[in-house]
Image 1: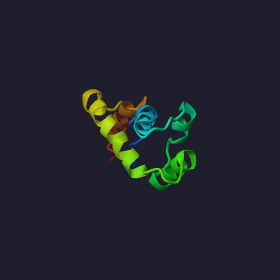
Image 2: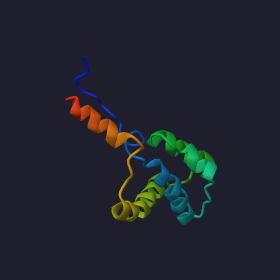
Image 3: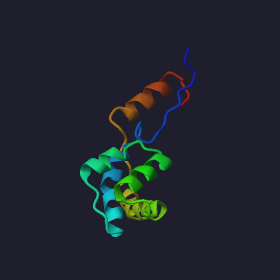
Image 4: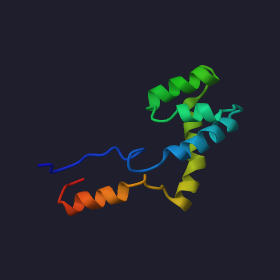
Length: 105
C-alpha cells in the first residue's frame, strides 16, 4: 500500500519554467547579451552547474553567471509576487485525491 508520495515541485507541480523563459533573456539583456527563445527553452531543467556551463558556452567564459542569475531573480520576484505561480494542469486534483486516500505528500 502506498503511504506517501514525494514530488519535485518546480516543473512538476508548479509551472515556473514559463517564467524562466521570460526572465533569463531579460536578465541577459541587462548584461548586453541577446538570448534566443530556443536558448531559453534549452535552459529548462538544467541544475545550477549545468545551467552556468551552458550560459558560458553561449555568452563567453567571462559571463558572471551569479550576477545574471541574481538579475533574473530580481526581475522575476515582483512578477511572481503580483501574479503568483500557476500549478501544472492536474496538480491540485492529484494532491486532493492523494489527501482523500490518506496518502501523505
